[in-house]
Image (cartoon, rainbow, N blue to C red; front, side, top):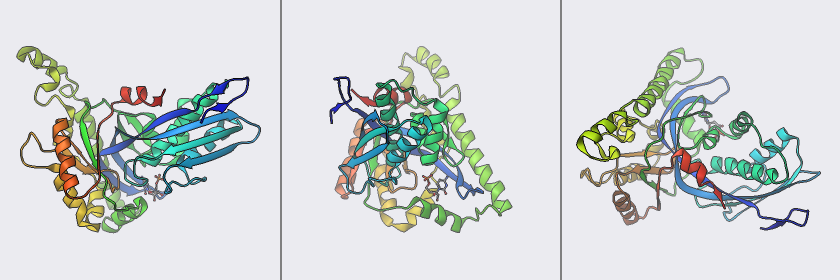
Length: 357
Ligand code: C5P
């Protein structure tokens, strides 16, 4: 989609990798006055991605045209990429002719934040395109504000890596990164509606704003998870300070010294995804996939951690070795469930790999 952008130059559009996320623990709290639920989660970006291509140039009138290879993607103002671009142009008070193509490789509603990531990818593509015409980029807070308006799990994609999400999930804080870890995402063909999953949660737990009893208990659970996440990821033993001493004494590489991977510390805290309680009873396949991802008792082959991602329907397993992950893919193939083998994506790599040159 080369584009004649004037001044006798042919401009190439910008293609952005729109990486997905998984949730390492998710606790649902009370309903807030605005109807959203407070929550605490640890988002982790992964290498699986869609591709978002943006061509843009200043114009007297704004026009945003969307195309996609996937007929399930809405091509109008309901599209998250459309929303973020519209908000950005409004905030900059700039008119532009914008064309966005979304090459979908991930499920549209899978709990992997794919649509939310598309919104950030489009924003980054837009800024790069307009930057070539001398239009200054948005400030960091402006970008985060737009992302939060588009959806609760959009701002995390402006941070990348391991990200603490609080508030309704839109208040994001970068956390120390986990080592790159093999990951298998299982993609059962089951639709899960996020608003319905929240309503199902409310039906089982009195999380209404009026329930002062639950307010206390719910908030305590959120704080408990935040503390557990911070402790597991930020303690000196997780950051390798003690491991380097031990590694020096034993002559082993620091990341191979037992317990050096903060993921182990994280799993030991007992992180869980609250959505499993309401989503799993909907279909026995969820529990079956979780068992298959977990694998045999053999600690060499078993998953380090298995969970539903967001409200699903994707589930994921994290493994100690690529072989462990490959074996999980084979087990899922055997039961006829589509899966993607990928790995977790630390922050620096997330940003370095984002623009397809
Ligand atoms: O923010 P987002 O558009 O992704 O949210 C979709 C829906 O999920 C909301 O309209 C709301 O019903 C529900 N939700 C919620 N609490 C959150 C996030 C989402 O109740 N923290």
